[in-house]
Length: 449
Image (cartoon, rainbow, N blue to C red):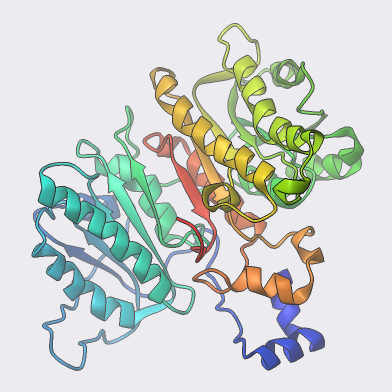
């Protein structure tokens, strides 16, 4: 049971929630689970990319119910599990009516924790085509705020030259429960050198993955989830967390490395540890981070520097060492780098100027590094968590905590495994076409872009 569920089942929690008029939050579908109801496929224009990708995923599809503008809205005989709309052939404003006509019955007929996925091409072409592409973003974000029962929506921009194999990992992720707390978001999928043919249950089998800040909370969840997917985990954290770190490493069958990531030789120490394993380094997840919150007027140089050093500069120093081809135990070609940004960095947050700077910096680093590492087939991405239920957030006073939890479209806080599942998707070898992206794991926060 999550901390949120415990809060509502305790006597004080029930009393406060009832007095505030708060309903129980919807239960989200998690893990490698597919929608229970039918997957409906609508194709607008002459696009067939989504259909061919669903075939690779082994998913059968049904035809959509189309709204003719009359009342009442036509419905499905039973709740549908997902609607996938292929608009890769959409180029004109009148065609947006076709999108409305298939979305309206589905929004009213989607099951709890169902999915709506819009598959489009990136903005290109003449003025009308570009305006229509941007209109899709507004539609996607708005639907996310209108859906109920834990259902979510996603907009996938898929490159013109991409194949179904390039999309298989991403479409599988957003349809499965792994994407439970990713809502109202959009990102880009490019073409890859070696497209995939299907999903795998253990896509990281025997691949070495370094996870910093792994002793507890989100870091521990990342280690557990990636180990479930087959990874050999190198769990990294500071010496004072050594006992908890050892427990996590033992639990996932990995190794522990006690290390201050701000040390000048941190990158060399990680590389040496990996080199001793006799296996190449496949991925690094830069999860370690700190907060030193104060209003800017009360933020001194020391408080500012410590956050920027741990959350951003240390990551850059470690990357520089591990990306050097001469480093034994460094990152192999075809590897993965994932940073942890934050909705605080993307939208700003009162009292967190230093933290927001560091996390926005992570997003900027990802965007800058991705094209530079493309020749080595190394992908660089980030996740941006919103309010996640951890030991730290559990210490926030109940009323304030409820405000944070409720300030998203899913009316609840996320779980550490929600962040971990998104990272697992980005590390999947079949996600080669996803790079330079920042994916928000926030339940579609109602504040910020």
